[in-house]
Amino acid sequence: MKVAVILPAAGLGTRMGGTPSPERAGTSRKQFMLLNGAPILLHTIRKFAASPLVTEIVVALRGEDVAWAKDLIDSDGLQKPIRVVVGGDSRHESVENAISALDEDTDLVAVHDAVRPFVDQELIRAVIEEATATGAAILGIVPVDTVKQVHRNKIRATIPRDKLVLAQTPQVFRFDLIKKAFAQAKADGFNGTDEASLVERLEQVEVSVVPGSDRNIKITKPTDMELARLFLAGEQESRKAS
Image 1: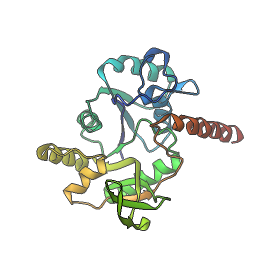
Image 2: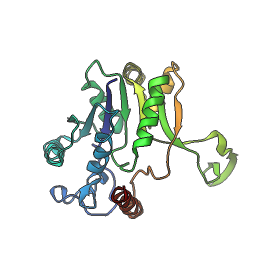
Image 3: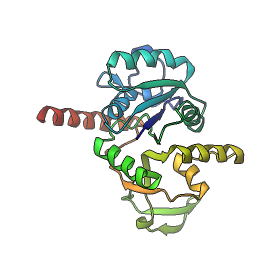
Image 4: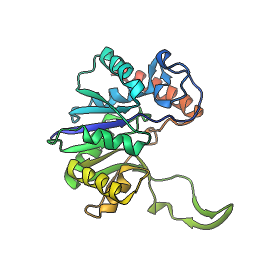
């Protein structure tokens, strides 16, 4: 089974504060913010490099970041094939570019947010195994807050939480399925907010949802960095204890 992981990391992001990698000083891009001395992107790469189910990792970056990223990855000594490709102006384009760089004998493609560095090995295993069996699977968690449908600032409905999930990544698909989904989206001029939305449009398979984790956070704002430091400290303590 050949499983390729795509990490789209070409986004410009918004200014969120924090300390960027020295080589990327002046940038506000989340993926380059330092977490315990290493860019968030590298922490995320390490998680998939440690998975025995992952065959290779493809990181999609802006052209000006490619050489720097290659040096960063090489210096970390990770024991997994890792390629860096040029991404696009959007997540959609970055994933599409990375898919086109994959070998034709790839079986599964997992797409993961570059700024979700706390996905654990059990989650990676569970979602890959589900996609192996069904063709398409994502991680998701049930919202804990009551969800309201509104028009402007007026409530129109209360949506039952048992019918909702908050989508996380990795999102994993058969290679032929995700290629077809992107081709169809391109033909239709459709841009989805995640890869599952593209596969859903094909109506070929039902996308399974594997229970995710509230620790599998996407770092998008300054307060997320505070939580990230706490989670990282917890991981380091667990490794020491083991």
